[in-house]
Amino acid sequence: MEFGFVDTKNMSLLTDLYELTMAQVYFNEGMNGIATFDFFARKLKNRSYLVSAGLEQLLYYLEHVKFSDEDIAFLKETGKFSDDFLNYLKDFRFSGDLYAVEEGEFLFENEPFIRLEAPIIEAQIVETFLINTMQLSILVATKAMRCHSVAENTSLVDFGLRRAHGTDAGMKAARSAYIGGFAGTSNVLAAKAFGVPAFGTMAHSFILAHESEEEAFEHFAKSYPQNAILLVDTFDTIEGVKHAIETVKKLGMPTFKGVRLDSGDIEVLSKEARKLLDEAGFKDATIIASGGLNEYKIETLLKSGAPIDGWGVGTELVVSADVPYLDCAYKLVEYDGKPKMKFSSGKMTLPGRKQIFRSYKDGKIERDTIALYDEKIKGTPLLKPFMRDGKVISSLPSLEVIREKAIENFERLPEELKDIRKESGLQPTLSPKLTQLMESIQKEYGAMK
Image (cartoon, rainbow, N blue to C red; front, side, top):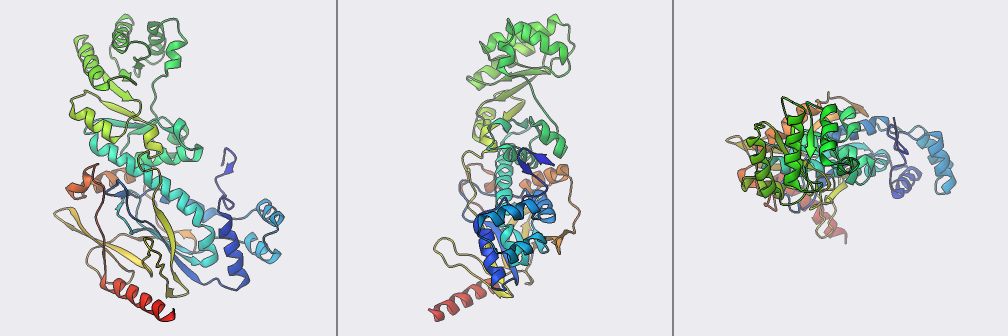
């Protein structure tokens, strides 16, 4: 479909130029052997875990990416590409294999979310889209799970579309937030596209457009008698709660959905609002909080006894404000049957085709071992085949199933890793054969210098 100015069915040119210039050099030199690339996160910052998300969008892209006649014409106009290479691109299709951890799975630093095996030209061209899609999805799913982990029995809703860094980011964020335990989103298009619940209340402009707060409440409640969440902080919050109560009583409504607090001292105001609602006989009316929320504020408010029933989390969720980027990489680890390794300081990579083996003790993650793909290591292998010869081979679970899996996987974390103030996560073990391979490559490189 068309979404803004981007054709979401074909995003071949949504790439960095060097992917295409490298691809042309490979083409010119007859280099198109099978390459294996890993996508992984390096050292985690202010995170003890990462939640996998974005795989479904990546698989869709890999199955559909192609260069249209218009794309080829544009590339020709740049003067950077030969006619022979452009003719190759006319028939370009991804034909490789892809192994990945399931969405909703938890990973730690240096563990590959994706292992992609394909002719090197194909593997190179899809790099930028892969990183772009996976990074944001993982960041938001992780931020959402951190909020969910401290929200106790309260509900969370994604309010972040208007603050997202573009329309595509807003869509990805809504989906990833749901994976991370949120109940739904204010993003109507995301609700339609992904089948998640849509939520909304009202804006301050709605109140200001009326002659009085009471009139605004009355108009809204008459249109939505079963779902009137009234925004009470446009002028004086406590007076706003009183006006909301008076409006519901005036209209003779049997139930009152609740109020939303968007500013001020949420702890104090929520306690006073709860008292007023209960005294008026509306003990089932909910109190929703919004406005600059994150996992730390939610935890603090609930520990202080603030009677909040739900949270609208926006800006800090969709931009993952405290960790706005993932130190991630997509690196070549094998080419034409030969393991490859990068030695750069602080950016050393793990060579060869690999697998992650996870072992549990008393239902909790005890150890992760990164090993060569064909090693026999105790534990459950996490990287599973999703594509073969460019076609998806595994049925993908519903978003609801992924969400449930993510919540269940959180419970399998060691208790210390559940703490939102924990700054580092589990350190995976390297298998003996992988360690031996690394030493062998380093020794070979040293002999070549």
